[in-house]
Structure formats: C-alpha cells, structure tokens
Image (cartoon, rainbow, N blue to C red):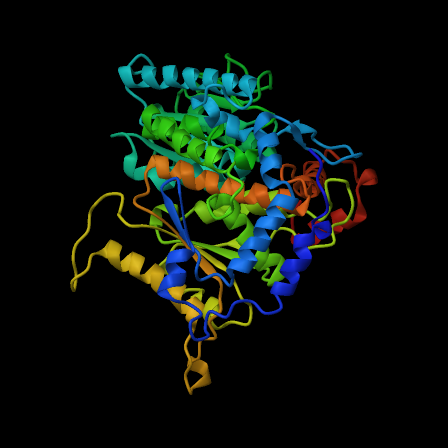
Length: 532
C-alpha cells in the first residue's frame, strides 16, 4: 500500500478555499428541517445527525474526493487482509500487521485474513470451555464454591477498553458475577479494589503481552502476596492473557493462559482476549459474541467508499474538516449515558496514542495538523461543569454527542409529563441546537455566538451488540484519519522515553545504580522531590 502526504491531494486546496467561508449555522435558513433530514446517515443501528456541522454539499463532495485521493478504503481493506501497515519506511519500527478486526472476523466465510481469524476462533473456544466450567461447577475454589468476581490487572489498552465496555454493559451482567480493574501502579488503587472482596471467590486476570509491563507485574506481585496472606494458592486464582511463550505463559503459576497477538495493538484489543476474558466472566459467552457481531457488522460496513453511507468514514472526514480546515484543536466526546462514563477515557488513548504523531510513514516531519486533543464526560453532568466554555469560550470545541432512545434497565418514572430518559435525550438535542444556533442578547454576557460544530450519534439502546458497533465505529474513524494524514496510527514510540527515565530513577532509588554512575540531574530531581 502506497501512502501520500496529506498536502499533495488536490482536494486539500479545494477544502481550504471552502473553509474561508464555512457554512453559517446562525444565518437565516442556516439550519432548517430540510437540512436536518438531508444530513443524516444510518449505519449498523446508529443514526448520525450532522446538520449541525459547518458543512455544505460542496464540502461533503470535496471530503469524498479527499477520501478517494488518499485511498482510505484501499488502505482499510489492506489492513484487514493483513498487509504490514505498522511501519515507518527506512527506519527501525514494530513492522507488524494490524489485525484487530480479525478477532471479530470469526463470523465471515471466508475471513479477510484466515490465519489470524483461525487463531481468534481457537482462543474463543478456549474461553467458552473456561466459562462453561465456571458455570457448571467444574471449576471452583478450594472450598468447592463458585467464583463471583474477576479482577483484571493491566494498564493502558489492557485496562481502558475492557473497563469502558464492562461499565457500559454492567446492566447485562450474569447474576452474582462482577468485574473490577486494577491499572495504576499507585498501591492505593490496589488496596481500594481489593477492599471488601472475598478473595477466596475471586479470580485475577493479569494482562500483559510481553509479560514484563512494569506496572502490571508490580500489581501482580501485590495481588499474589495478598492471596498468600489469606492462605490461598495463587495458581488457583490467577489467569493470564499474554503472548504465547511469554514468561506469563506458565501453567505452574496460572490457572489458565489465553493468548494475545503482536498484530493487535493494545488500544485496539478490547475485542480480543484482552477484553473478552473478563467481559465473558461477568456477562457470559453469549453477550461477548454479540459484542463481536456488532463490531463485525461495522467492520464490513466501513469498506463502503461512499462517505454519506459509511458512518466511520464520514465521522473521520468531518473531523478532518474541523481540525485541518476550520482549525479546531480539540474534540469533545459527550455520551448522554452514564454507562459510557469511561468511554471517552478509552478514546483518549485510542485516538491520541494512535494519531498523536508528527512524522509521516516515510519518516519525515509532517507539514499539517494530525490528531486532535480528545476529551469528554457524560451529560448531563458535563452541562454543569465545562459546557460554559464550549458555549461561550474563545476556544471552539467540536462536540460529538452519543445517546440512546431507551434506557438499559427500563427503570423510569414520569415527572411533570416526561420520563428521565426523555429528559436526558432532550438535553442532548438541546445542547446540539444551542451550540449550532447560539442566541443574540443585548446583554453581551448572555450572548451565545453559535456556529459551534457538533453531531449527534444515536441508537435505540446500549446493548452488547450496540456497544461492539460503537467501539468499532470509533476505531475506524481513528484509523481512517491516520491513513489520510499519512502517519502510522499503530505504534506508540512516544510513551517509551518516560518509561526509560522512570526505570533509571528507580535504579537510583533502589541503589542498583552506583553513585559514581548516577546522572547528576536525575539525582538532584529526586533530592528536590524528597524521594530516595
């Protein structure tokens, strides 16, 4: 697959010219019922309402041209087929395939990359057997009692995605089952998670591809020490998700081992064993298969070259319009669903670790903006926190609202003629309109400038299938943007320097580094911080 610089595409110049006079949503006729009906895309159970973006049919046509010139669908197809796309030409790099879609291509016949999908099927079968043994009483604790809690020990992609999905789908948890998560190397995190747990009925799921992640290994040692302290055998309470043949692939130390592959990056791994083991324990095998089906439906639909029909591609190109042409530096993801409270945190990693890059796939400095700052919190809480800035601040923040027409639990009550879910969605739609239209007032402090671009992504209910689809929609939005910017969205070299320096500081603290070999600056920093 050949990638070209963003700046060479003819559509970039066309879009730059259109951006000099973007659509005015606040003008007479700027936002009409007709526009609302025309600027709507339906895809895999979701509707995207994007009439409140500052686009016109001409802008959409130019964005289509850009997607075509950049070969986004060809690149996406090559990725799914197993081409080595995690690479920088001419430089040392991970040089890997990118096959997170293979973990849910298990429904296809034939799959896009048969070998990777066959491995995914094997791991799913191992997981099914494990979950069946837990359910039928074959696999129990030393006292013959069932396990009720699984604690996932991991960090980054081994925590954020699985945690976000579990929190989103707790309404569908099996009776008597729950999951918890330990990520931070802060010992208080471990202490808080373990507090109140019956460790004799708890399984720990340690997730590390290499088996050498510092934070995860440290927390695993703390967990094992607590188990021993309680008179429990860690080998009967700890499972591993790791690379085949890693130090953690050890049946003497782990109850079971499930495998993760090098070609699935951490932030894209929630639908691999990284996420499915804990999700399967808490939700059951049928639910995780629905997550995979939802994601797979999006994987297939994302191959459509028409941006008006392909929702992840459309969201990617609207994001490029806002970021590269309207020059907005951030994007707020605002789920009007408390269940999605950690989904923006997952997207922060997935998007910013993927597209926070400043060199091209050819190893040259980029000459254009790449990934935006991604952030967000659930509504309506956010309305009483930071919405002041997004309505009236000097920084224009494009917003992506996510909502559901029905609640998960169905527990609601009419108050003053409407239910809570109706109030929630009415608030979301009102915010979309308010950001777009603004409001004039003779009192300048009460003026709302409007023209704040936003879109609404809405589905019927947050189910396992819908969650899988939502996850994949955002994964592909991120990947399409990286392809368009000609950057490698699949490595994370930017996290390495801090790890190296932290290891050197720890060597100083522990005395493993002799004072004669110490870096004076690092020694001084520890001294000034009162550590060591």
